Image 1: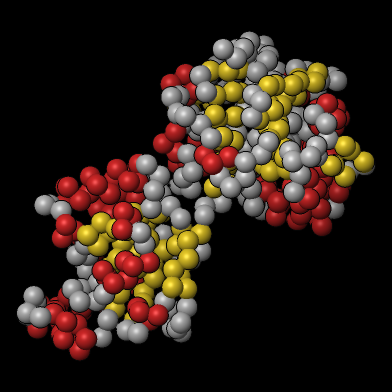
Image 2 (image 1 turned 180 degrees about the vertical axis):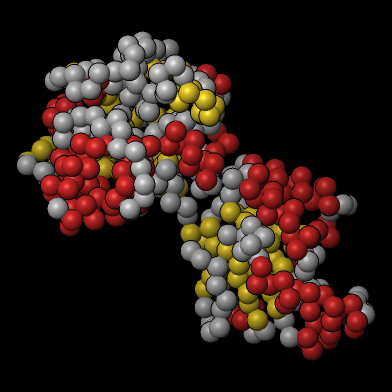
Length: 414
């Protein structure tokens, strides 16, 4: 969804289901009337608060709870809008501006002496002068409604791509495959999926969820991609992106990348498969969410894990954590990224299933489970049955890539 200027009415504007929405306009522009599109507990009118800090605190509390907030506040100048776009960034959500640009004659009739004619003209002029810079101010969407559009336009909320709370499962979450096609076929069979060539039929009602890093290191990344893409297309599976998938996408998009850790072999396989398949893979990877919120918010699927305050958020910070984990920015003696143990401090209610950091067996820490059991390194490929919270593993058929160090032990479920 992109910010636009509406020129035809009636129409509907689409807003993210989770956002900070700032209704921008001079007094009399219809901000309170426009707020009818939202529930009363979603709307925060500055006039109902003793001061700006009290207003900000109330809005921040709602955003922290993962709920949409709509702010009505004097905001005709960029400096007045800046705190709201900053607050949205602080909570890893989008800031959206809806600018209500009413005719000056209507504003003068509605002002009722609250503003002098000179003050009203000055505010209207400032609002229109700065309207084109709303995106540059940090508002991810900026809607400019004029005159009669204000009363006619409708509002439709669009869930974020990561928000699949509507899907209740049951699920089979599968750790890092890394090109291990035969092991993936073994695991799916053990889980009760019926494989017929590249066609996969899941057990009644169940859905596989791949936790990213489909490719590299193992012997058949192209085959894994074919199988997983077919499962996703048929509705038998969901998939989140991993850091290896992201790097492959950059390579297929023409970006300069270092073809390390098996990416060179993956690219050679895709080159042999031809340009049509490469484009299919690029489109598939481009459409993957960084994480998924499932089962009414009770289950989180993320390649590198995700702390509670980033669940359901679509920000760059949430995406980076979901792909790479909690990195320090440093490298160890082997040149590998140094990662903090984010799971050790996790106290959220949803179960977080993730991978990314290989262990010799599944690692349960609190309400998290790491399902990367190093299949390409000669370990195993592991799935979690949800809601049963049971893990199932199949052994690797070979050591396809030497591990940089011995896999650390996992941790059993308490």
